[in-house]
Length: 213
Image (cartoon, rainbow, N blue to C red; front, side, top):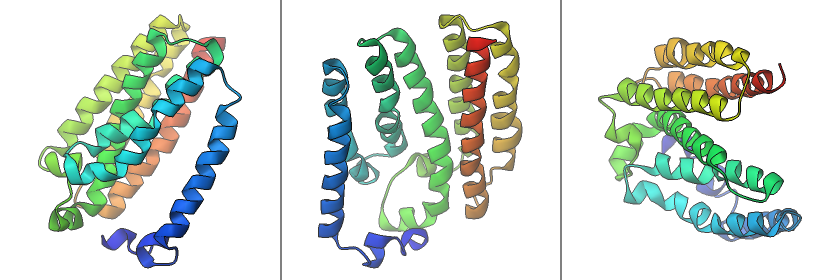
């Protein structure tokens, strides 16, 4: 893939053996942190390891690697809840589903940067699957996300200000991000993808407003 050819392993700057060793060290450090949490959280966290190790293979097996990434990447949302409360609940599970749809959206945008190379070498993604209906797919994912944010506000008894200020992340997704998104422009895709940093920050502040104001 042209865009990633200069990354350390792809360019040969780091050997596969060194990368594996480095990964093992990081896993060990993560385990040391994990052992400070309650038993339930430790078990759940260890259960995420197969997800993390198999995700890199998904683009070879399915058109839905972005879904698998969402399941894997957002797993920490559940772990954060169980680390504090020591049990699972509907709130983190529903939030988890919303985060998965968010990932489905932004990583599909990200995937359009490499769609030509991916098609040539036979890889799969939601970017390829929905290449002729890109914006429709993104709108669907983001509508589910916004709906879940509304449900979360109700379940957590957030103040009315939370719902009022939800208009800001809504505008960011549907008026800004989807409007500037052009699946034929890698530079534009990267810009739209990176704008999700701001979206996440907006949602965080919105949650704080709903909780404390």
